[in-house]
Image 1 (cartoon, rainbow, N blue to C red):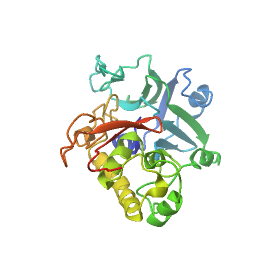
Image 2: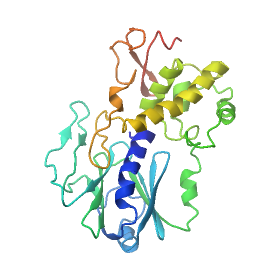
Image 3: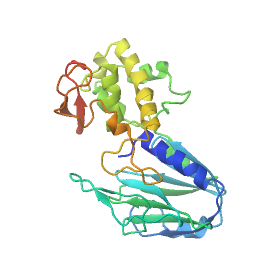
Length: 293
C-alpha cells in the first residue's frame, strides 16, 4: 500500500502540472472505488479549476472551486499524468511474485477507473488493479468531509506531532509497538514499510508490548518516525511492486531499506541475518541483534 512518502511524492509531482488548470471533462466507470454515484463527477466537476492539491495522511485532496475530490490509493492505486506530447507505453511491467502491474504513461485500459481531462489535452488517470482505492466527492461547504478525517492522528511533520502527545497516547497500552504505529489514529500515514524501518532506526523489537517500553525507547521511536518518512520522500517513495509517481517513474527508497523485505540477508549495521515474523497479521522485518527482545 502506498504510504505517506509515496502519496506525498505523487502530490508534489502533480501539483505544479495541474494547479490552475480547468477541468474539461471526466470519464468514470462503475467500479466499486467510487464512494458515490460516479455520474455526479461528470455533472459537477467539469468547468471547475483545480485550486490546490493537498495531502492528509494517505489521502490526496483535489481542491476545486466548489468541490473537494478526494482519492485514497488503497493497495495498488496509481495517479499518473497522460501528456498528449509523450508517447504511451504499451507494456505493463508485472511483478514476478505479486502479479501487480506498473507502467509509465499509458493509454486507458480496463483498470483505469477514472480520468480527469484538461483543455490542454493532458489527463490525470486513476488506475487500480485490485480496486481497493476510494474516490470521494464533497461539496466545498460540506462539513461531513471532516468525518472522513476525524479518526486520523497527527501528521508527523506538523506542529500537532509532539513528544508529549506521543507519550500520552502510548500510555500503558498492551498492544505491540508495531501494531500501534500502523494505527492511523495514532500517527497518520505510517504503513508496514516505514514502521519496520523506524523501529530498526530506534533499535526497538517490533513485537515489544508498548507498556514495557522505556521512555528513552519511546523518544527514539518518536524521532525515527518522521525521519524515515522524510528520507522516503527525498528518495521519491518506495517501489516494492506497483508504486509509481505521477510521471510513471519508480521510487528509490527501496535501495535504502535496512530491514523491510530483506529477510535472510545480512544487516548492514551488525552483519546479523534479518528475520521476518508476523505482528498483528502483518509481515514484519527486524534485526535480532540491533533490535533485541
